[in-house]
Amino acid sequence: MGLVRLCASRFKGKGIEYEELYSAGCVGLVKAVRSFDRNRGVRFSTYAVPVILGEIRRLFRDGGSLKVSRSVKERSLAVSRASAGFELSSGREPTISELSELTGFSQEEVIEALSVSQPTVSLTPADDGEPQLDLPVESPEAKITNSLALRQALNELGDRDKALIYCRFSLDLTQQATADRLGMTQVQVSRREKKLLLWLREKLY
Image 1: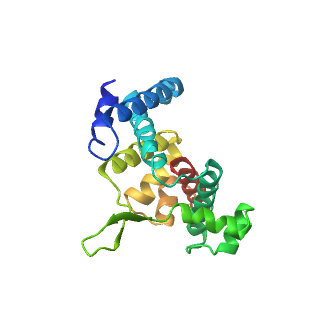
Image 2: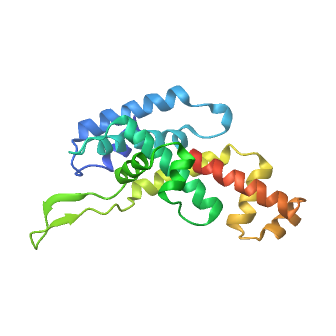
Image 3: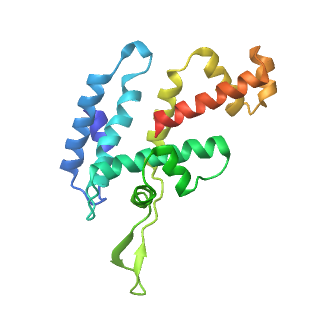
């Protein structure tokens, strides 16, 4: 329960009553308890905090004045994942028609899904009387959540895959240098790295 109080306190004064934040955090704690697997070698607090924060942040996502249907939210998530995967493999952002082909949605549905994640115009007037643009800024809580989620995902990898990720992104070695260190070919490193990055994106997003 201390984890719940800690997480809920981080969102005090941001538009939602503390009791609601605490209740949502308790729901997250229950979910974490039910799904926690101690055999994975991860501490419960490391696993529970992202789940608790996720439930609390859901209040803010669902509490806006503009309601978005569940189907549109799910479609938006699918389009975002497809876009991220395409950009990772091709090095550029996909077009609307490419996203339509990747997801099976119509171009109109893709456009609608993309609009859900765009910044909205606030009804609160700025100093000049014009509506202000509320731009999303990553909060410290989001950074903590992302860090814990990444650590948890990496703990699910085997030793060889962990070593590959460590060599490529912590030591900043080239694929060839990584291959030499791990006893692999450069092609094997390239293929495995691509699969691991796609897997991590699915886990984290």
